Image 1 (tube, rainbow, N blue to C red):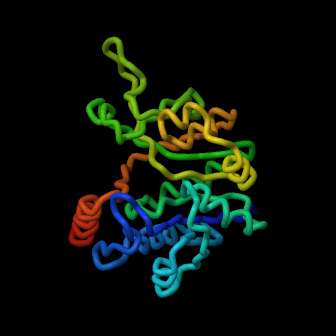
Image 2 (cartoon, helix red, strand yellow; image 1 turned 120 degrees about the vertical axis):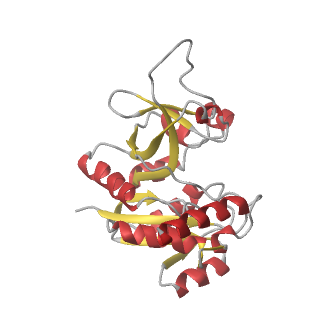
Length: 245
């Protein structure tokens, strides 16, 4: 069986929310919520928090996580997890679990791992969820269109597909979680960003520009990424409402 590793990138610096990984949400640091939901998934042989900051590392150690210290100058979370993956020679499947997604669905994590295991030629998997036409017009919501096999044709901040008339085409919001075969991940971070990636500021387009397929698993559950203190407040409200429900 392939060794499956979940890596949670977490950096201190954030232009909109410095130190958000340790921001308290419903009585726990945000990063702990992500780690606990990854543990709950039950599909990983190893889970690692990858961080450039000792404050995050110490908190992770204290609640029992495995932590890897990485370079501070990585341009993205993907580069950060790749640094860890290079040292994990026995890991064949790597999941990049966003450190600011405390509501990540454990079932979705299992589905992504299963998709990679069931399709040995598949290099990358990610996820999406159905959204309304109204939400598709928001620039910060990244959209994805799929082919008939469920592979990504394109990702965009624009509303895609463009509708010239009435259409029943479902619009999907991309959920920023990825599963990689180790070889594909290490190749990905060696490639330079292409024109499409630079135009949209979406790094997943680098894979498409270089001919890699990205399988998209559809989730019925949306997820809220924490980019601001206001996002953290909303996530806390949702977590507490579930506890009390």
